[in-house]
Image (cartoon, rainbow, N blue to C red):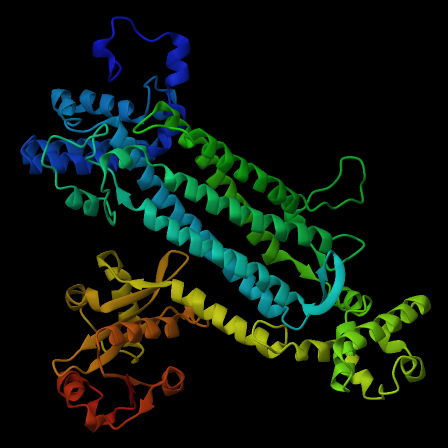
Length: 609
């Protein structure tokens, strides 16, 4: 097919320029998004009378056929000589439906077309990466829980400082990745606007309903200014910045673990599946997965810095420089995904040497601050206590002893206020327990932090239900109705009340559901609560209940009830036991139809808001 822009030219592009100008080797990744956008544009053109409804359906059908072919075999994308993915799709379409295919580009420019394709692809990929971050956080939560009581030294300046636990160390990096997830969620909001219909730069001459078009493509809204919409690549920079920050966090994690795995530290042992050996030294086992994570973070940052330089002085509106927006982002996001995957594999298979960790914590005078605090409790000003402990540390170093091995007489050289009660104060586990302020390393605070962390992870797995979830909801309710835990509900009923449901996802699949039913009296009921048996213990049930309770508050409801056989679960959510006869709405609606109405073992509970 001739170039889309060739009519004004007497001569064709040179071979060198055609090769230099072509972007199909890069933007072929957009094939699904280009087809999706083109199908939506066909519908929009029919709405304004440029196409008949029949023509629009023919175009959509042909584009759907191309999508099926490329999904089965994408090799034509790599062997084509077309300039870009837009030319490829249009050429195929014209070959399939003839002149009708030439009508599709009416009122549309490759400028708004590529901006739309790119945003669709970025939205999809960012959501996938968000799921990968949360998968990584789940593994961190398991590791942190397992190692909550594993004593190890904490470091400042790479010198042993104060005792912490391995679990507390893991959770420090979980905090970083959780912030990365928050940044990515926020960035997706600005990705999720639609530039289609902005034309080359000044908008389209056809009365396209751009808001309707945006909704059809799943965007939050249409862009507001055509000049900005065409040239805006802030979303690319923002995704690169989020990826760079997360890459730095993964690099720091990798560096810590590389040190922990050295023969000098010996805190951890890595699985053979994430390690490699030496071609010369048979004894070597190298942490190459972690070293590559550390190295590839620089590659991600380089993509961000490079594209920032590309756009730093571009005038409005579109310039061909923006063709350079894709290669770096594709590589950066691919690399970030790979780094997250390998981080999960390392953390899921790591072995922690508790003895080596505890020995290192005991050998670094990490209880010196505890001794200073002990002296402060005896009435000595902290600065004086600090100096006294420094003297005792020097004495202990000279004798190659830990502080707690010094005799009472030696300790009393600096202060006669030191008594036998000093030794319990120097115990490292006792030192941990003293760090009891919020965010501290005491076991109670760690357990609180892990509980809250699990709750946040579970809440992220809960969302409003949609019609694509109906089959999964039907299956869940049917299973628990068969177990006698829920009332059965028909598929038709679930479809009609889908807006009442929330679902919980595990690995992208619906694993739980619950609904909030509002009676005409204003009473509300949590109904149809159920989880896959494999999804128990993740806090998903509590998260769904809390989501529905938040909705009830937003609706200014005053009472939420539930009939349940697991009263303990709802008691923890703030529900209190009540008599069933105080619920005439429930009795009239469901109980009179229930086969167990005369032998009911469910407990009625309510939560007053």
